[in-house]
Picture 1 (cartoon, rainbow, N blue to C red):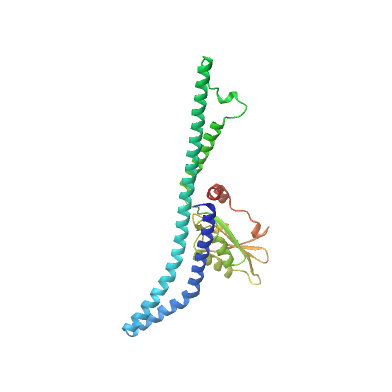
Picture 2: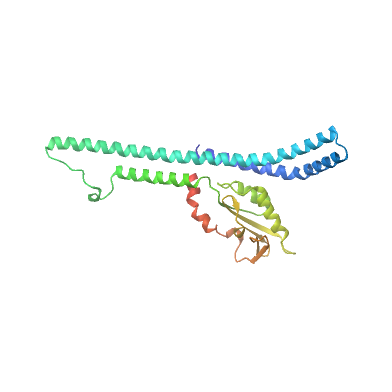
Length: 272
């Protein structure tokens, strides 16, 4: 899988997950109400018709939930396949460089052997330190070692599960989140966080911007904020209460958390 194939498929998967979430939120209330109504009808009269209505409502609701889960699972499969492909690609390229270096070494030894035969003396292969520049074969071996190390790091790290997304409203926030090269929190988790803070916006203020950060595919509360039009940041504390602070800059300009920057190599390794 090439980088272009991955990015193209990620766009499709992101849109499919967002569409599944929109469809779920649009129809969930109606189907839950139908399921409840059917359940109450069963209490009054346990008939075949009542059971059929309850079963139909339950199945429709389960299908909606399954569609969201399936879209998220497809995303994880895409990243797993691409990570595996990138690791294999790095190691294949490393082997190619090692083979090229080995070929150069063999050719050099042949040439030196011919010189020894012509000159009738022993000719030593000079060490690297006696040259102004490193030999090509040594450079190739060094590059191969770097690629193997990168492959090992990527393999240990696994699928990227950290990131940051921004948006001026919930829909834009979710859309941008799903386009990031990682496995973000579920749309349900982020929507719940957003609505909790939106409900706590002080009287006379309106929501201006939002930033959500995640690590290990879980929302990091103390790095996720909702900004109002009066330069006030709201966030959810660990105990579930709402924190508030006066902003010193626009939320859109806030840099990523330090732990995200430490994992930057992992994202670059996927798209290099």
